[in-house]
Length: 480
Image (cartoon, rainbow, N blue to C red):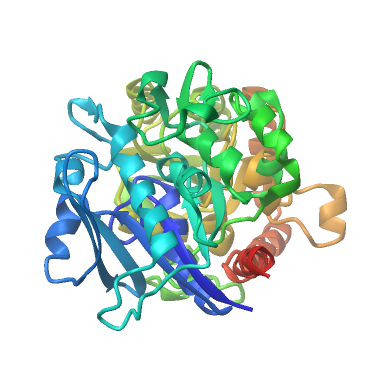
């Protein structure tokens, strides 16, 4: 069928990124364009973005945006059709999208309510007819996470103009809380402040506001959709999501296979010609001064308990004793960063750590490593394990969320059916991870079997084609 979608988010590659949300928001327009849906992405014009968009045409104006005017600028970057909400009083700040070196911006509730407000107005009224946009008006408003959670609510409470709404939960841990006394300030109706609608533990959650008002709810993997209805994963919102279970769908994320392409690395390699991977491995040994006789594992992650990084000090000694090695790339909890540095000091030549993030290094790591460790306690979808599959860097993952939906663990049954593409473990504790690493070491000692599992990994579909078709089907059903 096809139509128009306004995607509303706080991040979008290649302009601004703090996590996987940005990758998804940036990849969806092209993927959906291939199946007949015209998607435009609305994000705030943070300081650096406003400077880049000075010459872009104004396609929408909002005279009253919580203390100042706002205007929407239209342009295109890296093939993504963008709408930037230019409101200097809200977004012309030092630091990242949500915080500066002084901490979180204290008016974040209003900053992202403004984004949602303008999104809802564009959905109802359409853009100004200029610069070839011809009064572009969406059929569907697609909101992402708490930062856009008020957009479906504003459509529900202020009129939807015939537009349907979708809310995608990328990570339910972040819920956009505000005190109850801000209800009127946030342009929300008093009659809706009760437990079945906007009220949330005595206050307001923008994520809950979206959950109770959106026409459809999606999350980024089928397993995570099911997990969110359980108290150990729902983080207080499990009852809300369960009550709306009939409109909840899990659609697995994909990765940009043009950006993450082993055939484009130096040297190139693929499922049938893996010699380049051995060269990349040798280069990593030289770059990090390592000598590893067994499998080289990597961790590319935020260094937090949620990602299971606290389990590594207990299991890495056994990995090293079995002949393996480890390179860690990431940043996060200072205690976790210190623990990773301590491992590198304890095992020189076998463990290396780089605190921070480096996109080019990330590509080199996936190209040269044998395995990637993703021991998350919860993982809505996860992209890291998909990069590992794409590059033949076998994922070692906990069986949660999207990890469980993408990695098929080595077992007698999966080996017999030639389905295994990685190593899985459960529950998420040091014992289970230690056992998974022992399985990895054993697999590495069997070169023919290792090559077979690696080939399975590299041929496993991780692109956006299937997911884009699922989103298109969801939109088609809404506007039918």
